[in-house]
Image 1 (cartoon, rainbow, N blue to C red):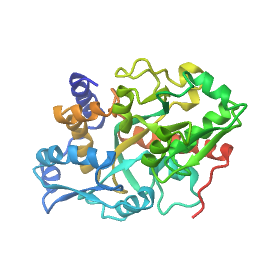
Image 2: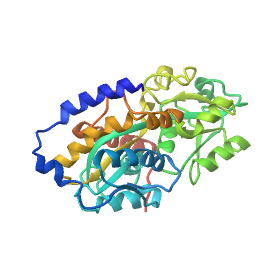
Image 3: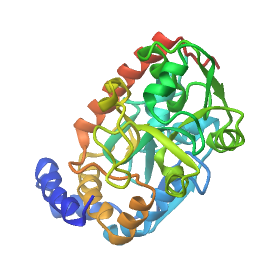
Length: 329
């Protein structure tokens, strides 16, 4: 996304959410101490990277210290539950993740929190589209070849774990393509799955574009399809699932800005208004472009973001049921 597009989004977003605050409301927050930007994954991952990109700019905009706090564990559930239990005073924010709010909700029998009603969801920040990746020397040159093969012989795809977004995308392709031999091999994260892909132990991996940009550019892997509605400008030769006849595999893993439920409206509005400006910062845009994990041209904020989460939960819960995927804990 170009800087001018995001700056235009500032005006559009502000117009839709702005409210006439009195000066006292504006100055009442933040005043008492650092703002925690909670990450539900360890340092070094996408959530942590985005949080640390945004934190100094948010701090400058609010004239208040912003600290990134990592609360990892249980696939993001620990940190997300921790955020939900914090006071709704604007001093605890969460970089929310579709992996937890959507895909875990769709596949787990129980959740330790309500992914919608226990939070104030302010805005989607960025999206990471899903790729179906094979080795550079794989015999599968196209998605059609790949799906046809999986109808008659075992084709093994890896994912970052049972019930993950990667797993559900693979199972949905199996259903939609009537590829009964499309066999799932779960791993503890994407890194070991990609290692086995390169070693020839599995045929493919479903994985977000974020960690695969350099592999794609080097040719060590090839993407048969991407889950975006239209082709990625950075990789125009990768077709979309939709154009190949699999429109149900259109989607992404988004990151958002959320807070505990009942966050006062003036605070939520102030943060939401700042988000387009933060995403338009040159260093933020450059870092996001490098991993092809970008904001939408029209930002999804407030009630629209909450409705999107609800819709995605419904969609992927139905997929999980069709595929008989359930995580019992």
